[in-house]
Length: 111
Length: 116
Image (tube, rainbow over all chains, first blue to last red; front, side, top):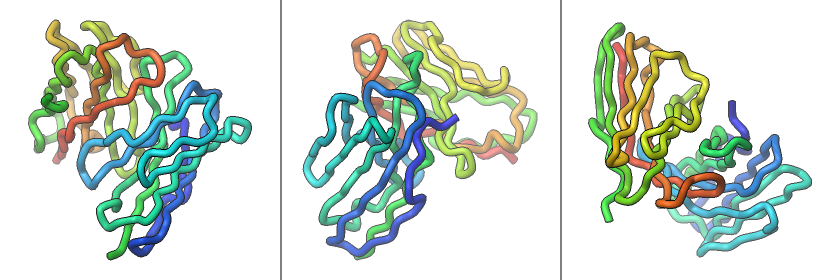
């Protein structure tokens, strides 16, 4: 079963625009992570936000977390063609030793 | 430091055969997780190993099995292959500390399995 659900499923923007992806989850969490996957490759960790944090920045990435709404958002500013990929949110199963991924958002950045 | 290595990169099998996939984690990482990724089901957790012990298992039939060796390398095996087993199989390792919560995963490039 999937803990996180991303929205939208797909997003197409022009280079230079900002991209926002949302993630909703079902159970309480200790932290939430975002990963990127280029087509047919492995996932790459982008950023982790802990349950007691509301916002976190890393370069052009900004992640917010609202535990009352069980949701998170990933903002990529000034998008580049190289940002074209699928983006997944992930949370840890309550029992531990298991990270659960959402269905992902496919981002396409047009040059 | 070398990343997570998965072999082979591509594999073609026929229904009824069995297959073994290999994963070498980042040096020093003791936890290895396996995932199945398909367009319809997304990323599905298969199992996680730490120090040769399976600590968690996903909801897959018994045809899917795995193991971890003393050097932390891991293998997964799928017996009696079905068409629906066609997928990208991803392996991920995590930090030297005992993995509980919040450890980031380092993924290999995956093995693309096609069952004909």
